[in-house]
Image 1 (cartoon, rainbow, N blue to C red):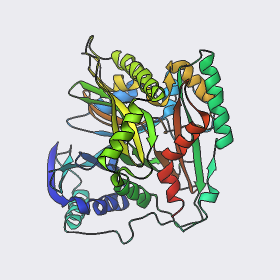
Image 2: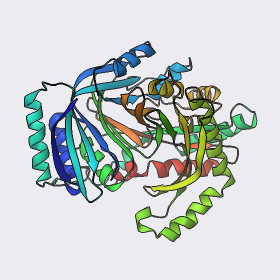
Image 3: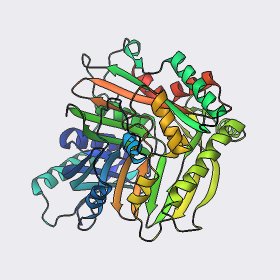
Length: 450
C-alpha cells in the first residue's frame, strides 16, 4: 500500500466531490459524519456476492487472504442472519445476502477540524492503473478548487408522489401486529421484538436521481453512518443503488478493542434539534432516560449485546461504561449505550460480526425465538434493512453499522423502497409505536412531498 496523491478539500466542496466520484466513477462511499473519517472505493477488482450456501470460510478468505492494507466495503443482509440461525425466509428477496468489494483505489477523507478535509488516494498495487489514478486526481483537484451542484435537492416533481406510497403494514395492520407481539410477550414467547413496515413507491415515470437524494440526505440530515453502495437485484441482475443514512453503530473493532452502541429509545422532537435550544433538548432527554418503557427497551438489548460479543471477547473484558446516553438525529432524540470488550486471541472481527448478527437492537430477545416471530408477522422480506454496512480493514479492524433509515432504488423496476420499525416491550402502546415508525421514515416521506 502506498499513497498516490493527497489533496486538501474545503468541507463546503465535499458534496460536489462525492457527486463526481459516484457519478463518473461509480464509487461506493462511506463518507462519514462531519469531522469523522470517510472512505471511498473506486473500481472494484474483487467482489464476493453472498448466497445462502456461501460458507463462512469464503468470507474470511475474501477479507483476509490479501496482501497489505486492502479494505473491504459492502453489506450483509438481514437474511444472512436468518440463515445463520437456521431459519431462512420464503419471501421474495430483492438483494443478495451480502455484497463485498475490494478496489483498485481507495480515497480516505480526514478532517483537520478547521473546515478542511484531506483526500488521500491509496492503492495496494505498486503499479496502479495510471489512467484511473490520473482521472481521480484531476477530479479531486477540480473539486478542491470549487464547484457546486446546480440543484442540490432530490429532483422529484412536486406533489402526487406521497399518494403513490405503499406500505406492507399500514396503520391498522401495524397496530394489529403490535397487539400480536404484546400477546406473545404476555405468553412468554419474547421479551422485546422489533416490528417493521416496508414503504415503496414506483418512480419509473418521473425524473429521479437516487444519488442526488442520497447527497441531499447526507447534507441536510447528518448521521455517522451514511453509505452509498452499488449492488444488483438478486433475481434480475438489474443495478440497485443503496442509500443508507443510519445513525447506529453495530460493532467497531480497532486493534482488537470492541465497541457496540445499540440504540433503543426514541422521542420525536417538535422540529429538528438544530432549531431547539440545548436546554429544551436536555429537558426532553430527561423524559427519555426516565421513561420505564424506554429504559426497559435499552437495558434488555444491552444485556443481549453483552452476551453476543462475549462469544469472541476475552473473559472479563466485556463492560458497559456508558448507559442511557442521548443524541439527536433528524427530528428525533435517541438513547444508546456503550458496550465494550477486547477481541479474544484467535478470533477475528469477522467472527465477532457473524456470531452477533443480526444486531439485537433490530431483532429482540431472546434472539432466535424473536427472529422466528418476526418472520411470521412481517409480510415483507427485510433484505438489507436491519443488516449491516461494513468496512473491514484487517482481522482486528472493522467498522459496521446497523442498516436502519436505509432504502434502495432498483434501476430496472424504478422502485424506491425504505423501511422503519419500532421496538415493542410489555409497556408499548400500539398507536404510539406506529407513530414512531412514521417519524423514523420521516426524511424519506418528506422527500416524496417536495
